[in-house]
Length: 114
Length: 117
Image 1 (cartoon, rainbow over the protein chains, first blue to last red):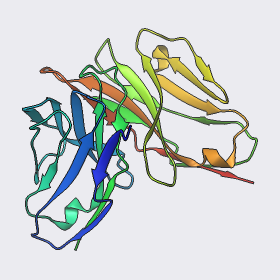
Image 2 (cartoon, rainbow over the protein chains, first blue to last red):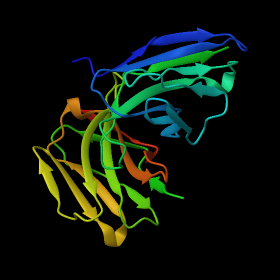
Image 3 (tube, rainbow over the protein chains, first blue to last red):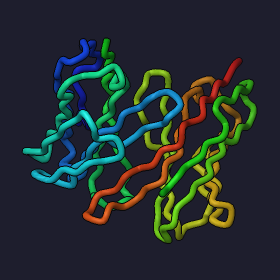
């Protein structure tokens, strides 16, 4: 049971480049989300999904797109990378969409934009 | 808006000392959930505990204990007889439901705990 798998673990981009951060879970969880972690700011929600075909914006969605074509996968796309997007990104899932379900996190992707 | 405050940025203790990590939250919801997560130096986030707003019983799990007090909007975490392996960043989080389903965790800024020999 792999849980939540994120790839890549590290990535360096130049300003203006685009890329996709991959996230897959094998727990049949309905709820998936993306957070970014920045020093001194905790984790902030970027986008989330309550099921296949359904996505919505979180707290800091600008510059990011998501899609949810299957229950298992929830990729995060950076359309035109900016230095302000340098961060550690975490994908998370939970078995229910209600607030009482603990999140299971992937191991993170450390992104640097130069 | 919901808010979680972890006023202790960094705490250093000597092994075997007890240490308490503070968490104060703000919410207008009557039903809510509080969480603690651990982030060791390796970087992953590990779920430790969940507490709902209707359950004010303290909980103990081994060397870990949690004290939830609605009257002071606090959900503090105590490690008894700390060990070097407890060195990590600890996050307190508050669950906020979205109208259309799903929920958002509002995280505190974390407390870095360093346990030294």
